[in-house]
Image (cartoon, rainbow, N blue to C red; front, side):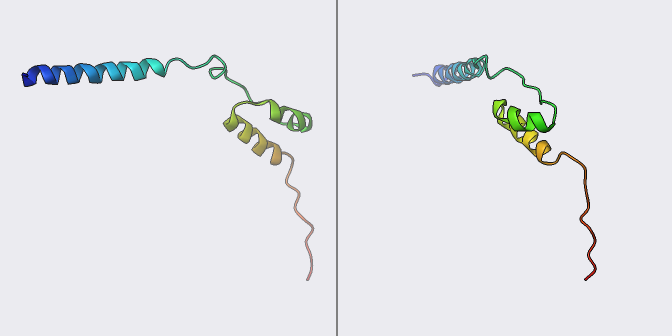
Length: 80
């Protein structure tokens, strides 16, 4: 068998496999494409909305902001 034809078949196979991977990546579910926005950080939302966020990264960021809400209040100074 001629090496030219062998190389051509290998190249075609590689192109076909690359095209198959490219097309397979485009078939995401519609639910995955939804963009969620972060709810307002307040007492009511921090108690109820955190379980409703489906995106894990957004959920973690929201939980982090809920833990850090409020003002900094220094502890009273102690005289030892």
